[in-house]
Each structure stands twice: as structure tokens, then as C-alpha cells.
Image (cartoon, rainbow, N blue to C red; front, side, top):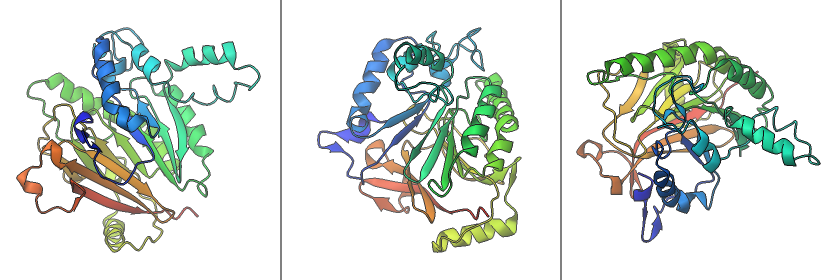
Length: 336
């Protein structure tokens, strides 16, 4: 999908981005290095101009008896090595803090080796703090790290918190006809991740959780413990989002968005759970765009014309060669 967003005239004529976040399953190389080279060629027009941040996915890491959280052969034996070599992300704290400026040689090399099996980290981008987890590694160490990381966030400097990982904590409509065992597995892994992380997300009032894995677009209500925000609060939130008032609102849990529609074959959504999912789509390929001010965080799902628009979306708003298929505005929280 990324390669088709670039033509002989350059990128689509959209406002410039300040960051790209690619949440796992980057190249589907699965042991074939040429696929990594092809990905590098495709993303170059983006990655040469802005930070290109990534998360590790099952097709980068999973292999039996290798320490991955789910032991399938999805990485083709790469076990995260090729990913770590091509996309070295920031070191997770406290590894980064342990490196003094006067002793970064061998010590940093050792830390980088350790990072290959600890590919979780965080960073600030403008008004947003982003914490990236690995759904392919056991949660215990990451829960402790995430708790410490989010505790240290200064919400005056970065009023928005986004958490991202490859596998979703909430997913709906998985087609189990061809891979019945995978259907149960994805729901089971989602439940395990909710049990591990959801209390931390609630404690530190995370705004948005991003995931991939299921090749579709899925957006939940503000949700905790499988329960949407109370109806009264939800209706007020909807009204204020539509009016753009930017009023501070009470916290009812993060919105979870699956953004797995970037280019690989789409996954069908069978009988979505309407009481939890506000919007779902598996008919199109596209990308999401996030912008943040001190009052609002705006999220959009765009389908470029070059990727083909389904007849059902002709009534949707448009911008510079794209159809905006989904859009929501999240007012800043009232933290005190």
C-alpha cells in the first residue's frame, strides 16, 4: 500500500506529516531479505523526511521455542533479528539512562543486544507521548516498564498519551472458517493483553490505543473491561466532539483503533460487535492521520483514490485525492 501512495510526481498532496508510526508486520519478509529491501525502497520518500517509528509484529518475531509470546512460525525464522538490524528504535528505559555520555561504546553495544529481545520504548512527539509495546513478548516485564513510563509523563507538556502494539486488545468479527484455531487464538491473546495492561491504561488515563494484526480498520467506543462509557457520558462526548467545543471531559477509558488496512490482503469482518465498535471497515486500504492541539486530538482514516474507492463511500468527505472514511475528535481530559 505504501508504494502506491507515491507516484512520479511524489507523495500525495496532503499536509506534511511530522512522524510515521508503523505498527508491526512491516515487510512480511519471513526470511527473504529482498523483501526488506523492497520495503526500504517503498518507504524512502516518507522515511527520509520524518522519523519512521515501528513496533515489532508476529511476522518479524514469532518462532517456536524462541521466547516469543505466541510460538508460531510467522517470522520464517527471523526471530526479530532482521527487524532489529533494519529498524533500531530507542532503547527502553532504564537501559538508555544507564548509558553515560563517557561510556557509550561497548556498554551501548551490549544494551543494543539486550534491546533485540526487549523492543518496547517510548518517546514524545509534540504534544503526544507515545509508548510502544511488543505483543510478541511476555507482558510481565512490559507492564512494570509501562507503569513507570506513564507515571513519569508530564501531562502539562504532553497532554495526550497513545499506546501502540501490534496485536489488538479489542478485535471483532474474526472469520474462523478457514483458520478456526487462529480465531480463538486472537481473541485469547486480546483477553490476555487486556488482563495485563488495562489497569495501567486506566490508572494513567491513556487516550488512544493503536494496533494492527487484523487487516482491517476497527474503532471502539471509549472502553474499559469490555464496557463502553456510560450512555449519558457517551452521548455528551459525541455531542461535544461534533460541536468541536473542546470541553474537558471525564475519563471513561481509551479508544482502541485497529489500523491494519495499510496494504496486505484485507481480513473480512464477520458480524462485528456493534455495542463495542463504533466503526469497522475491511473493504479498503488506507492510512490514518492524527493531529493534536492542547484542546483536541483529531483522528482520521483516509482512503487514497489510487487504492480504489468502493461505491459505498462516495458520500464521505474528501481531501486532496483521498476519501475520509472515518473521523473523530477527542477533547482533552479533565485530569484534576
